[in-house]
Length: 359
Image (cartoon, rainbow, N blue to C red; front, top):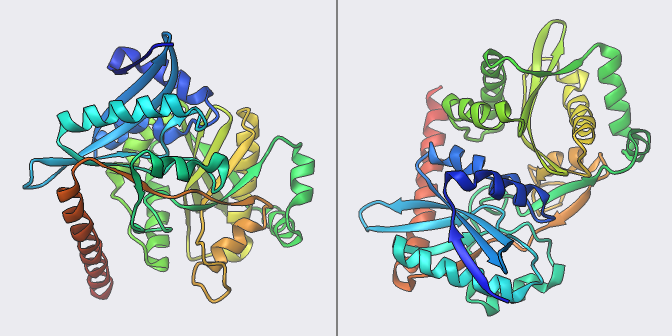
């Protein structure tokens, strides 16, 4: 049995995506297209494939970013690796290749947040034996990617899925329909601007930062136009009052962004949007629908408890991932990074608060 690793180029795109889409651990954030998205925001994608006897057995899309003024860089593989997590020999060869690449790229670490729930194959213990260390908690929902999510098995029929929803969730879906809320997928890029305007309202109301419109235009060009994402709009009395953006790859779908206007929230458009996205995912042959992040603090006094309760109403499974792990490639610079990163995010929060006061 001979292992070989190779950094891929543009002509390998189809093979790489086919492997990622068909693998149980495949994730849209590991696709070639997601690397292209991030390339427009200052990251450099590096796609690595591991072969065993000329057959691909593991893939890893890494994003490289230079650290200003140091000559060093960081590597980040969102929801990677795409591999059998119990195939330790293959994993060992994958990390060996990463160390070689990291040395050439001047990388101080590789950060991963794998698509592996807590306890699955005791993967966390394997990572620590392999030289990884648990990363300090980053911003957002306890991580760069959410550590806690709701996932719904949608292999059942629509009737069975709907019947399993919480009674209040079923009521709100029916209420939205009775009140005349409609949901449609838009293929018109001009309507992306409408979605973004509603998203800005949501961000201001709920106090979080969003990316600029150009980023969403990039998502449209590289994901929506290539069949990897869709934008859903909920209308009431002829006006868009809510919208979502969802991703799809292979047999999986993910809810990525949601937006709602301040008006007409009482007609429950967000409930109907989720139900329509679940049906859309089923129509694409998906068996798993991921509601994405919730807080790990499930107490009712948590400001994010309402989000948890909303997603829980669809009867998904509360899932905790093993979290972020760092493969340290340069201990000295890695220590400096861990000191500097929290200060960076603290400054971002300060700027956001100042902007809020100036509005």
